[in-house]
Length: 362
Image 1 (cartoon, rainbow, N blue to C red):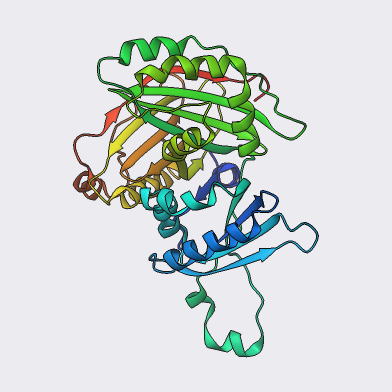
Image 2 (cartoon, one colour):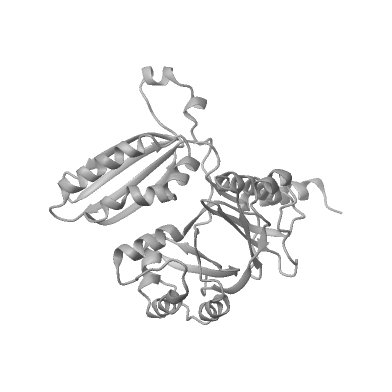
């Protein structure tokens, strides 16, 4: 018979092991964009930024932005922006409107790196502090505890009728070298299909962008990408930097929520796709995240990990369960299931696992 102290110990262990990362906590967002401009293109970049800045000012949820130039290297610039919360920023940055807005920057920018942070604490003068309470400033209430893994996904569609050939190509590729550098390595790649939609989820320790660039340079990966090119619904030319940039920008499927309540190397992985009604993708993702949090607190649940990915009206949920637990319910049992169903544009579906590869030592 389990004693009270043992139950308390089990609950504390579960709380310590639980990892929850989310864009839905309502706190303010700070976005930092590091930009490297081509030599001599500084004035062109400044003019393109000012045009972009005027457009961004009218985007819902945008608060302010600031442009800075390095005092040591005039080719290095820093753009910071503040947003009311993460969802409106993600809705904008993942939109076709954003793709069009940033087009003028591409001809003068050599490289960029985007970093996104929830505001946890801030220091202001006495006058500023009197103007707004902490609740009005909506700071993150407490730091989140991560597991050192960055999760990201890509999604794209292939021409109807080509699904079987594409699945065959994707299933037979050779895994790239897991080690990227001294601080970054690939942990796991999972690939799913349903109909003509492909979803590739990756897990990385270290620098996500470094890992993505490392993978793109591997001959075995390049061969697979070239092999599926003829079957893509949207054409791309990997030898054309602009074509490749636009394709992968549109294909990005960011993780908006992740929760881990346990670990098991033999866990079974499932992917579920939720087609959202127009404009409802973010809200649908938020409801699924809420349900996953409730599931993580249920000690009887077979779910060990769940990640919600969302871009526009495409929402995908990646779920790891205890080995032998069986199929995961498409609609989570916890949370506001009826509201989830109202936001769906058709039925939520299980995706077919094409390949799931974990790197040694991951």
